[in-house]
Amino acid sequence: MKIKIKEAAQKFRKWSLYRLAKELNLPQQTVYSWANGRTQPAYENMDKLCDILGCEVSDLLEAEPVQKKLNIACG
Image (cartoon, rainbow, N blue to C red; front, side, top):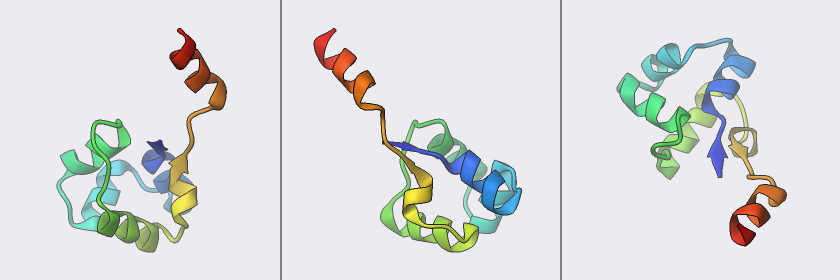
């Protein structure tokens, strides 16, 4: 599951990832790691993200297309 943090920050608040990190009171590196898919936020941080951005968890999640999963499984 990909987390669309950068897109959500821009869509809901017109914020950069840098600004989002400041608003969350988290290191910039942490938020960039989430945005780049290296790590995923813990549940409590997902709640913080939703509260600060004014969105739902579903707005942050992007399911991988089924076709891509099938290609990986078959390939």
